[in-house]
View 1 (spheres, rainbow, N blue to C red):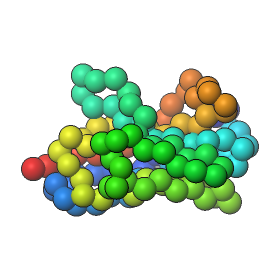
View 2 (cartoon, one colour):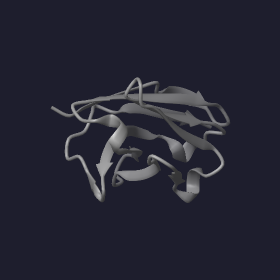
View 3 (cartoon, helix red, strand yellow):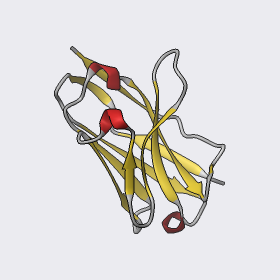
View 4 (cartoon, helix red, strand yellow):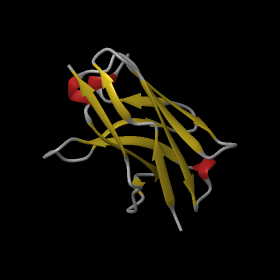
Length: 116
């Protein structure tokens, strides 16, 4: 059974930092690309960063501010978020991808709220 458990969210002022963590289970973690998504109120879920075996990619709005990393020994993927903006406010989720398909199951997410 695939599971994702996200943590590390919270309330922070604009310009601050947070580090999100996700622990995954139920699949061979090291063989999958991992991604962080976010969903703001009234908006669709958006992929913000993903990491494969060899490289990383970011959506334009977070480039230079967010860093994704993974620890295959611990089945975890992290998202370091710096210089946070109010528009980063959302629930953040992680997921895993095999080739072009993300898992259909999701964790509970972790809420990030950035105040002005």
